[in-house]
Length: 232
Image (cartoon, rainbow, N blue to C red; front, side, top):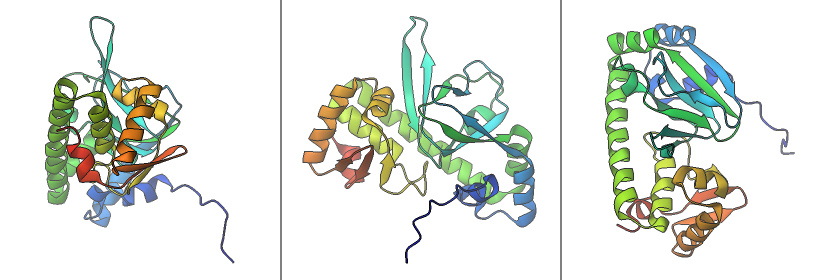
């Protein structure tokens, strides 16, 4: 008979083992990681990290959903990108000495891992595989932001929603996510800067075109390359 009991969430150590950057670490290196990482549970609306603070951690989203944003002098808030489970961010900030230039806010209750700066730096100094991972991560993030800048300046709302969803399913930045994400239309609205009603219209357009399937509380991607190109 099938076991219908819910599975226990992974421990911090189990979650760390599943990340791509940890796969090629030696037992000694991974032990160093475990000693240098701690977990926080951030409630919906809480800050995972804040603009202007000293950058002391590399940050990973074990579970939940978050947005990276910045406040403008005019009082407006600009959303830079969404952050899905399995993703790590802040490596660029750790390589510099300036204060953090963005806020990251939890859009729902989230489990967050924080790797101390000294542990991150030690891995850079001792692990070739970790260095390669960081280089690929930085390059992918650069491409992501160039694409988002293009969509904000040149594309209509339907294409902006399409590109926003495509970034959440990026297999390099969010490996292991698969093709389905538990995300509400309201949360997509927070990430794209448009109303929930307008998101609903865009999702219907994208679903009719065969790029995705909308279910209650979730999105399943059917054509990720097409979603990335939509409107371009």
